[in-house]
Structure formats: C-alpha cells, structure tokens
Length: 219
Image 1: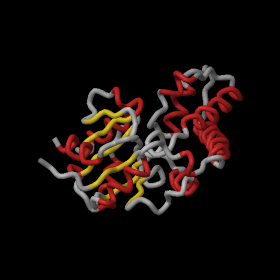
Image 2: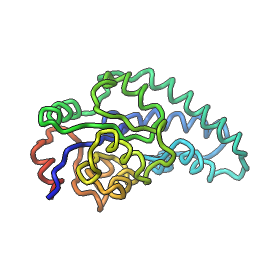
Image 3: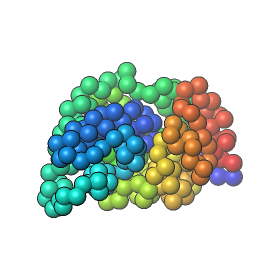
C-alpha cells in the first residue's frame, strides 16, 4: 500500500471559486460576438484551458475566426476576468480549505497547486495564500491542459515526490482524468463527486477528517 506524501490541489472550485467570474467574462465576449452562450455551455469549460474554452464557445458560431481573432478574443476575455478578480479576498476561500492545509502541514504532507489557469499567482495573492504551498504548477508552465497529466506531473516533480505518492483534489472531470493518467489518487469534490473514476468523492472539504482522507485514498 503506497503512502501518500503529497496532496495537489486544483485552484478554481477547490481552493476558491471564480466560476461566476469566468461565466460573466465569457458571457460578455459571447454577447459582443452575438454567439449563444449559457450556463450549460459554461459547465463544459470546467478544468479546460482558455483557448480550448474559446474553441467550445466559437463552435456555436457560423463565423470563421482566424488565429489572430481568437487570440484577441481570449485576451479580451482575460481582461474582463482579471478585472473581476480584483474583488477576490481571503473571505472567498472555500469552506474547509484552511483547516485541511494546516492539518496536512502538521502531518508533514507536502502541498501544491496544480492548475491550468495562467492567473494562478494573482488569485493566490488576492486570497492571501501566495506562500502557503510547497510548489505551484500552473498554466504559465505547461503546454497541455487537463485532462493531460502534465500539470500534476510538473507539481510532483517540483515537490520531489513520485506520482504514485500523490493525491489530487479536483472539482472537474478533466482534472480527475488527468490525476489518474498521472498515476495519482483522485479525490472528487463538488461536481467531480459524481465522477465514477474518482477514488474518493466528497461534497466539499468542510468537516473533513484528515486521517480518513489519507487512509481511504491509500486503499
């Protein structure tokens, strides 16, 4: 039975939720382009990179967009999103997160962020967790977004821990798939609690017993 030496956290939807900010930003861009976009389509963007999200949105348009057009649209979306991120504060950290981070550190379990978002550093700064993790792997350091395992393997490498000694906490199917592809244990929270291939399923991180978590994902 492999011992868990590190826990890698997705950022959005696990540490803090900026889902509504993403939706508002993509909705604004879609409206400007006269492309239909709703919350159901937005759900398909969970755990997906900015450019891949844009491709999903543009698939609902008859207009042909050049690569330059797409880059400009993605840039506009990110500008709107970053403006909304200025509203973030430590009060937006999701329930159970701080206690879990403290308990993991107390047990000498290494912790890292594994996120496809290029805005990870800014988000962590806004919520006061910039120096809380042993390693950060994000969209600024990878070529392939989830479900490719690259970001989680990068995080494990930065921690100096073997992939099979890592557990990943994710809120999206793409993240669960990426964790399993990396050879790691996958913990699904929120919407990912319905993922059949998650090793452990949780409604959220509040009232989480750390010993139970580690023991269950080791099995």
